[in-house]
Length: 229
Image (tube, rainbow, N blue to C red; front, side, top):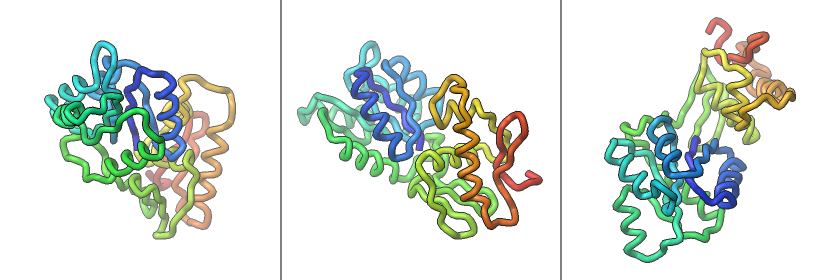
């Protein structure tokens, strides 16, 4: 799942983002309310995690703005403001959950999973939880992959890679696109990390199948889909 984290405390942002990525989520981080509001209104996310006390544009202002714009992406507010009336204010502003700082990462992850299990509103623009091409199926919520009904075990990075390829099924995906989307690199690290991961993924997805789905587009990148696709 793709999550937007809006948090101006660098240590907290790194701690939360790392924990979310370790369980397989894609995380975009905004260090200010203004940047967070821009991303939340211009891109599609499965979940928002917002610090309440942000400079310039605070978390509740972001929520009110989004809800007024009919953007109903689930939102979890993080805040040191723990009084009942303060939590109620956050929920009334449009938050789906409210977690008081300091918090345990395991609790945050549990709340994130609970929010992601809720049915998505049709007005959010959120993609469905199931991605399919031919007999290959990825469940973004259950975090499972099956081909021909048989379950395939993937590592978190392989899961993210396959999810991105499925989102762009039939399209040529460049190495630069994969570096930015899956590895959060906005530069070429001059390694063969992508080729190695795609090779491992291809071995798991296409092994034993007469119809390979992951294809190399020489000199450009990769494409997922039937050969004639």
